[in-house]
Amino acid sequence: MKQTPLHDTHLALEAKLVDFGGWHMPVQYGPILDEARCVRERAGLFDLGHMGRINVTGPDAVRYLDRLATNFVAKIPTNSIRYSLFCKEDGAPIDDLLVYKGEDDVYLVVNASNTDAVLDWMHAHTDGFDVAIDDQTATTTMIALQGPAALEVLKQVTQDTDLDALGYYKFTFGTVCGLKNTRISRTGYTGENGFELYFANGDARKVWDGLMTAGKSAGVQPIGLGARDTLRLEAGMPLYGHEIDPDHNPIEAGLAFGISFKDEKGDWIGRDALAKVAAAPKRALVGFTTDGKRVPRQGYALMRGDETLGDVCSGAVSPTLDTNIGTGYVPVELAVPGTELEMDIRGKRQSVRVCELPFYSRTRKKN
Amino acid sequence: MRPDDRKYLSSHEWIKIDGDIGTIGITDFAVQELCSGNESDLVYCDLPEAGRSVEAGETFGEIESVKAVADLNAPLGGEVIEVNAAIEDHLEILADDPWERGWLIKIKLSAKTSDALLDAAAYEEVVAQEA
Image (tube, rainbow over all chains, first blue to last red; front, side):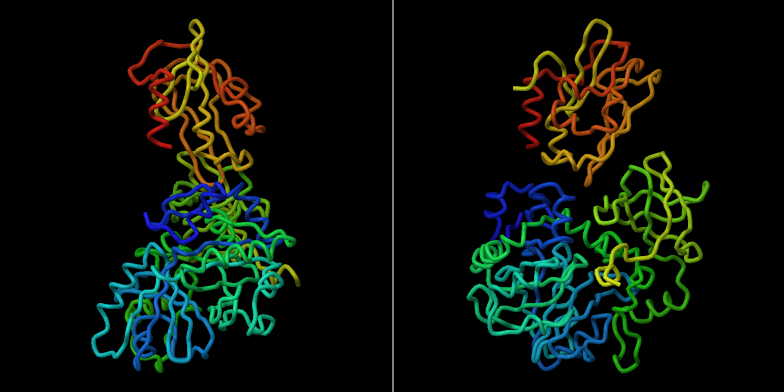
């Protein structure tokens, strides 16, 4: 299994480590629910070294990515970030990703488990484009700081950029823990205000320790991938292999915001297939809550009477909502908040109620 | 070394035999695997009603943590005569004392041996391989 430069740090913290997309990653350092609460109430630090990081340069970088990606890359303002997907001709997603539009490069952050497939796909589609594809996954790493205290903590160790002025889904370069030219983005996978930082492998310990020290009084703790999954689900964010996979297209997953059918974008791979789905979607991803004790799990069936409607994609104990939550697919006519359905848990039934996604919104909470 | 007054399954259940009564529980390793030492991560335990018959190796219930669900398998067959009612609302007992207070069910044994049963030393090897 591959290891991030913080692997020894996780071992020293006595984290439970698991295989995640071919990487030996911390799933939890302590109770998962406590870690999720820490991020909602204070802030948490995440080792995301397993995520794939790919830089695309060359005169055709944008035009090339507008051929592969579902969103309109040419229209992304410089120093902004957009959610996107790569799909096959039939609309089946290869991966979902974040697209960082630089002045003369486009930087992609992809899922660990799909990094190889994404790179293969990219290299297979360079004909006619003058581009260079630089896989930086092995030489660089990535840390996220997420939570209401994230901004104040990161400001303590950051110079040469104004973090207050850095808007959501924007990025900049600044000095973090003394490291000049660190990529800083106001992004995350938790639904909280927060940042993701990118730097060379050899600097990982310096940044991690620097942020832990700066965040000590604010109660910053290391957070594993278990809580990260809970947080992203509460925030209604999809996970490849759960909400989207080769059999679950991004239209029915509710990800149309990351897909552009504008003529100016030109033809792109998967466009025709996804346009057909968009014209007549058959099923929709919904969120649901359940009063029962059983936790929704991927693969459980959603039922109404004897009729199987679809499958559960993800589930979690939600410490923020104080109930068990899940996502799953149902026929579009049943994708209505308040609809009562049942979940089949290995032969036993538990009632669930369709609700609005996301389950949790930081901005909505404040209103 | 885990208690040698009982037998084990490689799926991490134990059975303690007293006359024709078998008391069944899960091992500390099973609990650890489910909740990584964080007892609050245990969320649910489904146990059978008294009166139900179970066969050796049959799933008689389920235990669930925040991140995983595991079957509870009967080391030996018999009729369920008693269920530990405290467990459902106090899953932390399983983390505190899986060997005594954390018993799950008692069965009236229909047979006292099975090829699947391991002694404490053999179970220790199973754990060593999985840990």
